[in-house]
Image 1 (cartoon, rainbow, N blue to C red):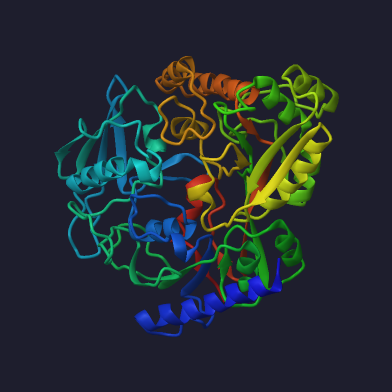
Image 2: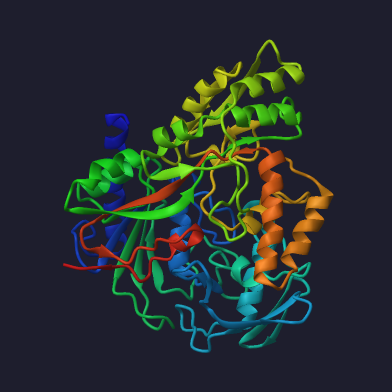
Length: 504
């Protein structure tokens, strides 16, 4: 990490803090027990105020999770728990689910949260599918309806046993009719927004939230793209929490008693993504050769520095549907060269591998993998792309690039990226029989049988798909001493920090 970059980022943090402070009053830079200063992944250039649009900035999603409540959440054991919806019940077809809302839930302007607000919000999310990667593409919101003020019926397009889990975390509810988010819109979450300049959002605890009152009075969320700068902000005492720091920074912090490392197991993956509809990746022999060229233990050791483990191209290895006991894919350069020769590339193959620094280690992984590919006769030119535009100009668009998965369930990955009609089918995996099998699996009411059927599909993607999933890394958050209660689960559960507290 360049010193100049660190200093620039820290200067931005300081300036943003002053702006946030000015918008709401008080000393935002002092370390207190009722103010949490949280630096997250994000860039002002791609900041958004619309909770139903794209979520390119994790800092935006974190802010939305504090302001706008969601229907269901993720419990500490990974299972779905009530949030704004206190209960739910499907019909016999598993296509119509009735969600009962809490009667004591209100928006920050005092209005009660009604089923009409929920239906409006979900329909708006569906309407903005082009921006949010089809977040609700499995649902028929036109057929969904309000039953009464506190009951909404949500209709899925096909029988869907995982509806409560599919609605976890990203179903931000706003008042019926809200469509202009250039000014603060009332939310039903535990905090309300009192200042935001794109770099720093300032939120204050909201009295009257239905849930357990947060011990924090104030939260400041700051967007910083560079992971080393985020870690340095905690180490220098400027903030209380830094999300997703680099393993190198975690090693540096482990010996200090003024900070703590929060480890979220098996939540980070940087798969190398290949498009099946473009040469040379349309040839399965080329894809298999590239998978066989990977030295997975070396990648894990170099990128995760002991905070990860090797993977075997299974897209969601921590999911209950992960297949049991697939044969480990060992590195086999001779077989890789043979496959390339059979595919007409005996004289070598030249590729461009795009990567970035958005998440710590993405660039390291690409550079090391390029060296490994060279041993198989593949020249991979690594192109480092700007982190603030990577997920809008490279991700799901280029032929060969470093991707990112953050521990979401396999069925969610499949719905968004593997169905023939998925809005973000980044590998162009289009197989009608896969679509049929996925829908059949999701219609299975028995959890064990459902996970077994999904496991078969995971295995198929592992064997024939366009992903090189070489390892899983831990999510690494750094806190100053005294910060407690930071979520440790996978996926979007890390965004719900309303019960974090600071002692001492």
